[in-house]
Amino acid sequence: MPLVFDPTSRLLSQMIEGTGLRHRILAANLANAETPGYQAQDVTFSAVLDEANGKGSTEGASGVQVQTAVTYDTAAPVRRDGSTVDLDREMVKLAQNTQWHNAMLQILASRFAMMKSAIRDGR
Amino acid sequence: MDGELSALDISASGLVAQRARLNVVAENLANAETTRTAEGGPYRRKAILFGAEPAGAFGAALDAVQASTVKVLGIEESAEAPRMIHQPTHPDANADGYVMLPNINPVLEMVDLLAATRAYEANVTAVQAAKSMASKALEIGR
Picture 1 (spheres, rainbow over the protein chains, first blue to last red):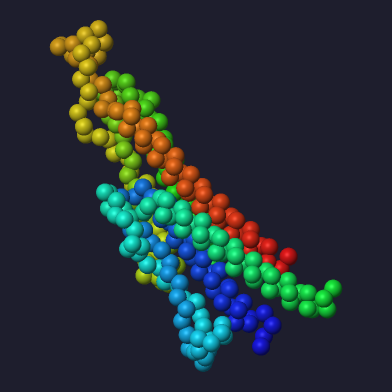
Picture 2 (picture 1 turned 60 degrees about the vertical axis):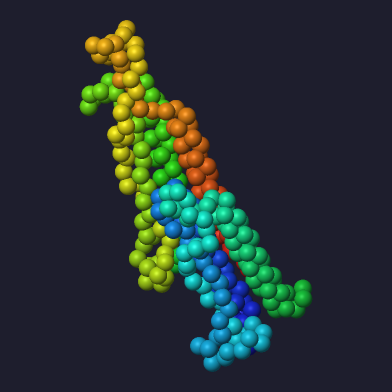
């Protein structure tokens, strides 16, 4: 198994990429908070089987990939000006997404620190 | 490479738009009693129009739905009738002693001012989140 590109690190980096994309989408919603008729967007995350790599098992991290899709947020209430941006809703999502992003990065950093520790023979 | 950096561009467009809106509100409030303008007649209330603009062709190739920046489409003058106040001593009073004052309601302007400030702050929060995400990424491998 390659040292750095193990399944967990791969999944973590896919999640980090996904939360980065979600931040972009949520920032766009906030920028357009006062645009009449603007449709709020969101990113959905789903686990898909990693068939491209000849795997495809839900057992453990090795056969799964994280897939993101940008969709319209249809659950959001429609305002009188036709916009579906709700400032409170967006701010909660933004805070949540930032925490997720930072958590994934923290885990990835810990994994690298562990590898570093192993390379240095525990010193 | 997209991600946090273009998220900053998107948030920046929001900041620019809300600041432009604040300028319009300030102009309306400053001219709430202006009876003479270059076009003749009293000052007319101005309103700003926002529109969403898809952020670059790169996103379009990847996703059907894509992030949009906000753009100021224009500033339009209100067509509402001016307020008529009976004040015969005013230099701009008409033959019946009425003065045409701008169609500005200070309360509405203050509400708009608050809404613009809140929207501005929301974009500032998004910028700070993007910054924290980017600086957290820089901590990897430290």
